[in-house]
Image (tube, rainbow, N blue to C red; front, side):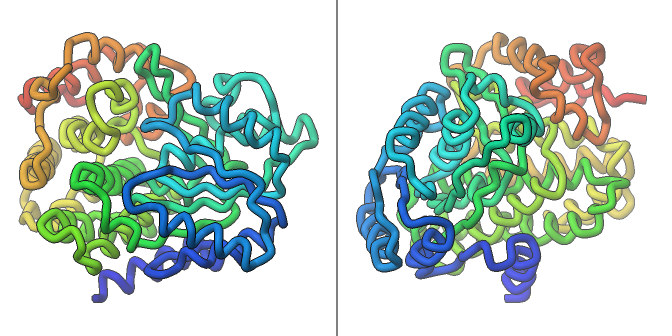
Length: 417
């Protein structure tokens, strides 16, 4: 189990004593929360089979002397902005010392963003982008309540990171808060909770974990953290490729569940080392037809070909992890080989490889994605690309990438000279 040992060591390096993960760790919420306050607000998801876990959490809090002032419903999928004002109002009314969230990425992201609204006021649009929460806290001399985040899905790693994804359901567009101030003070992930997850969620989460490691690896060339990112990507991507098919065949496979949990936690480490880029950027415009993980997975093979001439070394690593011999391939040819391996894995786990095959897809989705790429609030995704694009280049270069993703025709992609 050398891959598990490597993953655990990397996660320990990343989070130290502030993170409890593995099996049977839910009760750690008691001492974690008690170190931060005596009165808690619990924001939680309700899901089949979740009540025993919820009872474990409230019991552990009580045993550690932490009073649960109120239990509040979490967020709907993709964290709609309408849920934030409700949760922010509940936090304001309860006046807790500490916030405890128990749920998937949407509920954890909602707890992060709702506390920002409660503390700083305004609208959530004021904080989309990078570092704006920290700037507002400094200007007002304020602090956020500490947050203990308990993850329930091997997916987004929201419990470990500085990101909060928020969706405007009216426009079908997702935007992002990126700020160190919203990183949960403590985090817990009991991988055993995921054994009851439906296959669709398991697939989405595993693919999201690949996307985090893959995209950050692509953008890490020449950065000080590139060597560490290679280890994170090699381990995380390899765990998903190995264990996602196994868990789909045998959902109660604990070894597989731990493998996916470790892999997606490493995805969280990846996005704290660097940033995601093309796949994530475009996925934000597809929330009405695709889950986040599937959208990223469908797009990344096409961005792989686009980036290929600039990322030969990362592509050789990915080829090795995928089990293909690409040592004699270079540039675009190397990108094509890796893209085809990624597409083959999607087929293996039952995910479409072309946007045109997704129910509900229309050319308007491409128009929306190209417009979003020009939005200054999402410019960090363009800046993270290994082949950075300016707003003026988007239609000429991103347009063909998305058309290739629609049709499955990799030859449509244009590389920047």
